[in-house]
Image (cartoon, rainbow, N blue to C red):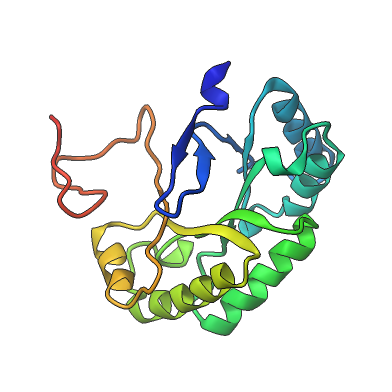
Length: 194
């Protein structure tokens, strides 16, 4: 299916497959390994994981064992939502890279603007600190693109005020049963199409 290999171009010129295979709620170990292996055989070229999913090691093993060349697989992982310090972000990134056992990551995201058990709380200062770390991680060349996940307009504007590098992605939940309300904007200036 061509939709699995169709891409979008990010603001830094990197292309990302339009459809990804998510590994949320797949236990680490053989289940994740098999799921990712089968997804790659089926034609998926974007694999999404996160430190919080506790399956990065199995994801990395399946990618490395695959017949698909690493440069043809777009790999996304995410910084834990509870990590809100510069040093914590650097340490968690290093841990992710060790678990994945890959030489680089295609996309690294801040998983949420607040810890999951404090959904909606204000972590503006922590997100600024974490974004500084994300920019340094990007500058290192170990990641091809950086971004955020589950950020709303306020959260984006908060980091854009200090960002030298703009987020390249805001990964949001959007599917049947979860949709935007007329008063929710994903990005500044967006209008509800009705």
